Length: 313
Image: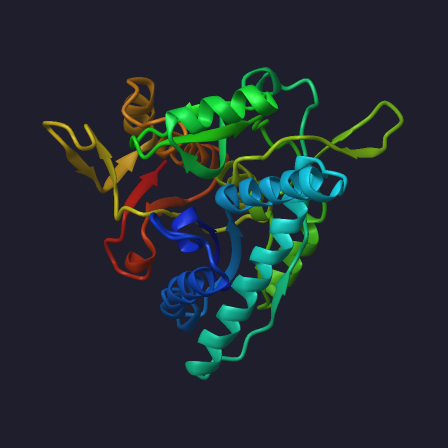
């Protein structure tokens, strides 16, 4: 049986620091990232791709807000905006990956699945928003928007500015994961759980209902990787490895590391919430639940023998 890998594209695969977010910028970023998938595809890997949507969903929310203020167009809830970005980003990844495969003479089917993910509407995260969405603001701009709209803002861990934060409940179930596995093992490259999935809950009548939230894409991708029995789970980010004492005296690159060691570093607060900590947790969950290897690295390292930080059982 061929190896099955779930790869979660980080935000920089779509939009990089200092960019405005034009379609040309995003398509070029996606194209560049997809180039680094070619070695895995040539090795015969079956692939499932997840992706983030933090900047994009925040921008869509702002567009809805501006349309409402200027023209009276009804604003739509966050789950609707997640669906919008899941479709648009999935389209970009699918299109650019098709271009990359064509250039390399590779024929593979690619499909984008709009995916709902079930959460608990009583999740404590709804009382403590923490998931960053949208652009960076100065402190003054953030305070003004918070007062005007009732939004919550947190300062970026890397001091790049302030961002709006929304609830990020834990994923509980991914409908249609069986279809994802079947397609992937038949050789189709599947793009799914985009932006962590469209958040929904099951009400007392058994109906699925959307809810205002953005699910962490790494946790959702990790859950999917376990469900479909993936051999590898890889999170692509903007650094080649995980570090302890990051940008501080005693900085150390982590290469191969056990669950016990990485848990200890996580408990010590070595990894920043809203940045590396969720990625580390997602990898820990994958390995704890039976996954073989979980890798955190940048796209350029894919396919290299010693790529990234590898978390082992």
